[in-house]
Length: 185
Image 1: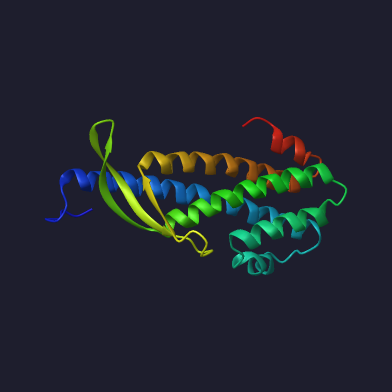
Image 2: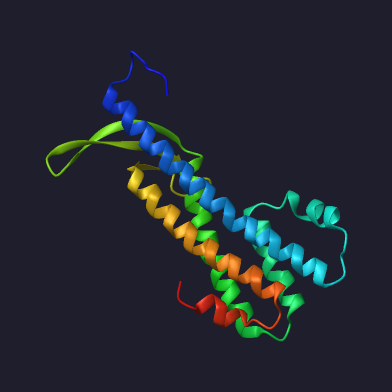
């Protein structure tokens, strides 16, 4: 980050910490969907689609909601007799959906560094106005310190572990999906 006559040293340090935390969250979040894509590829391969480029084309443009729906539907088709596993997968996909909403709100907001009072001292935090896309709430104001993005990154990492377990279960059919998804992290 270059020196700027318009920002103080403290503001630049706060921005750097925020950007690092946002990046950590963004990477952890995308890894969840990498695991879901791989699980879909494996299910396609297990059912006879041997052309990897075709699987890549089918999944390349599937984003958050579509990929979650596709993974759930493919698993229901892949293992129709595993109703308990399908329910656990649906629960996992719902948690991913909740994190996706937070990710979209936070990463698509316009952030500004500002100070706010915290126990009698002024702390740097990020300030953003998040516009509600459903047109029901108007807008909300979000104040986030890097610690909030670090918390979100930790949540994303937990979901990534579970998404990887899902992927492993479709790759190793003897594994029980419900057991894997409810096993302690």
